[in-house]
Amino acid sequence: MWPHDPDGFESLVMPPESTDPDRAKYFVFVGREIMGVMDAGAPRPLNDGEFRWLEMDIKCQLYLGQHEGGPAYAAFAEGSPGEGFFTTDLRGWLGKTSPSLFYLAGRAQQHIAWHFEHQFCGRCGTAMVDHEADRAKHCGSCGLISYPRISPSIIVLIKRDDKMLLARNAMWPNGMFSTLAGFVEPGESIEQTVHREIKEEVGLDVTNLQYRGSQSWPFPNSLMLGFHCDYAGGDIVCQEGEIAEANFFGKDDLPKMPPKTAISRWLIDEFLDTL
Ligand SMILES: [Zn+2]
Image (tube, rainbow, N blue to C red; front, side, top):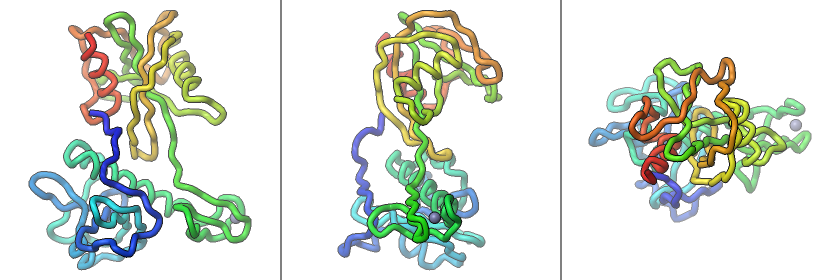
């Protein structure tokens, strides 16, 4: 389940004149939660009528683009949502709604966070204004332009014959094992990040990096770039404070693994399918 393909969304800065309000979607955030309507057991964003009649204080509304023929908006509201709506952390939508709607909700959450975190210029303190042509904010005083922030990170499965390396993070309470992951540093290529993170976390050398696919992970703003690679040498030495335990696992001795909504699991399942 790799959501590589176009998903019916077109990112635009301004709505087209022909946009159909009856097909509008509103991803409304209240505090750190997203509002939704439960529709046949699946959460969905608000429609035009539901948004229009909200008895809440709308603090901002951002146009994101067109989704399935209608405009998609992110909004931030204060007050009580009222009857018929529910609120949850965005993780509450993961695996419960279509991947397309989940990633659009993640896009909305990241734009709302960026909007409120970039009200003032980080260089000179002047109030920022919306950029005329791009989805960006502009400082009229010093010229700084701020774009929505994305943090690229790598996630990698190391293969060794018919086994794969999975590690348990020292911060995870529930005994789950997953693939290794880490953020790209400024000045690094993504391939360098893969080698560095593996060396740091488990002390191994690897070769034959193969890019497999990516996942937007809006907690808070990661872009996960997924790889397979082959073990090339070294003994496992777990990074203190980071990795509690790491081992090579075969398909007959699998530990507790991530859910099927996460790229780590897609990397794992893809490897298991080759055995
Ligand atoms: Zn400035």
